[in-house]
Length: 395
Ligand code: GLA
Image (cartoon, rainbow, N blue to C red; front, top):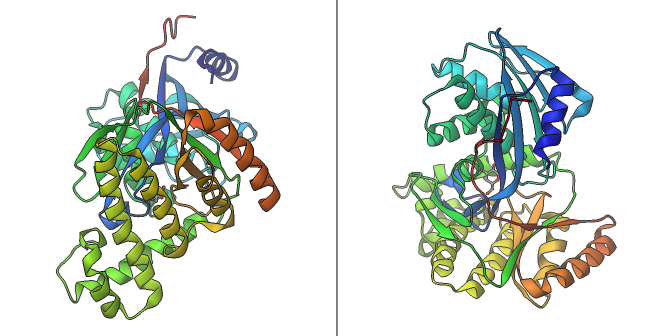
């Protein structure tokens, strides 16, 4: 990503110089999958790939939006007075939703703007390009309209956009990781209380490898909402027997009792995943802090297994990546990351073996699935922020 090129594009599209540049990263989750909306723990980190937004304020109430990732949609125009959902152009609804909810929450945004977005997160890869553009729009709006909204409030607002404006019933993990990420640090987050701690992931002799299935994720949001409602149904039954407010409060020891209460093998499998995953996440956090990476790797492998067998969100493609890499020399652990149903898997790999792991996994995936996977080495970056560009706006 070259921000100078982005600036040049802005000038040629809007015929004026941009004033400010904002950025929001994507995220991966080390472990703790489908636990966030169940009041459990997650362990994500922000990556250095993300969404950039160059912006210039206008003197009227117009908003003009362009994305270099969707050149076919051209300039999309909206007004600060009419922020309803755009039925034709999907991507603009992320920034429009953010502006809409900021205004609705009483924040004063009375000047329009021209904005050019460009993201280098592979689209639809499950690295949270949607939360990334939301948070980029959020920090941008806060910056240009000088709003006094905290990062955590912005995070919550962006989650509401995803849930209510876009219609995906996702948890808080993505926006939180993208909002609060820190270079070299993973975030250990309690999704019930939003208390969190940073844990260093500056690995000395290993790399985090991101492996993209390149599988289209069209059905992902409906399947995601389905899993979420299965958990809600299970919780309703469990609540008749024990005083809990989320599945995240259950312990592994309670599972056999829960099985009897539920009397439904499918719902039990869902709950079993959530409860064991929550436990694995706690253990992974402690093991990483203690420098026991081997154990973190074992927990990652077990997490994948549970997401495959019990939560049933992996699919052939993610299994082909995670399960195959788990067998290779130098691989400490591997699992799918994010919602699943396609998207990406991650592996922690000894630095000297990274090339070989990519080569072998690439070959195996192509042979098994029939098309290629993509590979990236992750760097752990900062959360959403303004980027101060030398001389920006001056020519
Ligand atoms: C998606 C959602 C998150 C989380 C993960 C699964 O990324 O946006 O809130 O539920 O799936 O862990």
